[in-house]
Length: 392
Image (cartoon, rainbow, N blue to C red; front, top):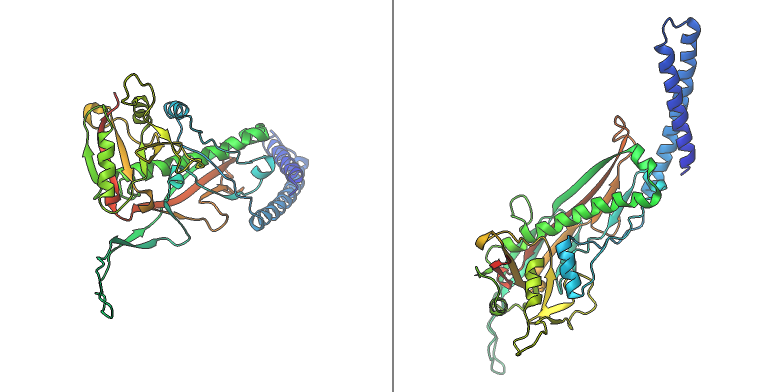
């Protein structure tokens, strides 16, 4: 696409229209002025037709050659979460450049990006990338009871206890409108911030819904899962008995607890708890040998064999005293995630730059990011939610 040619056509056309306006509004305009208006109008129409032809060519080229997928490793980051990550010696996930240079901004962009939030880093999580509007998952909630069978005898035929789960991805989207002058004035390296910003906005909302979703016209988040185990602590942490109890409850139903999800403040309190050995300053947290190569937040440490996952989407202002938080202990292999993929690309976040006509009147450009997701536990008893943990 020849962006220089398109810009030249556009600039000349605008200049002619400006000259036409001056002649039309000129006091006591002569017949010669009116004839000149007619000539300039023909020239301006020709320039606009040439511009539209160039634009249509560019749009066809954009549709036939999608931009490459861009891995966007982001996480819902605040200063308090970053402090905890540093304290744990964990690597923060930072966004890579979306690569929006001058050439990309002058055409309609459709790019598909992946969504590696903490969800996809959970050990054993079941991820479904679908193109249909919903997904049905048949889950065995109770195993059959086997028995000793004599030689030549017939085993008792049993029917497994099952439940049918339906995942219907909800749409999460944001759109920003940006003045064309701003885009044209910014250097190529700065333009990437627009793409990064809208993608991070969608990713933060997806993470928040995965944890706190109400289930009403939105996904049911982990902390609002119906039928899960519950422990109401209501005090500050003085020991780790409540975590051991939560893991025991999960394991008692045939699941295998492997994940501890909590907030930055609770994680910091856990970090500050020391070994019971007299005079010891050693932290209770141990290196995660089961998942050493993972790149997500909180995967570098374990407690009772549970991967510690930190997210500042976990509330810290509810429950006892108005300053309480949560711990969710669960078996991540029982958690099903459904992402509805866009029609193009390999990721689950669709990043789209508006066409020229979308914001023609205001001479602005738009950028939209969209994702569709839902989640559910195969068996809600594979989850135990501890509430009322004082973090004051």
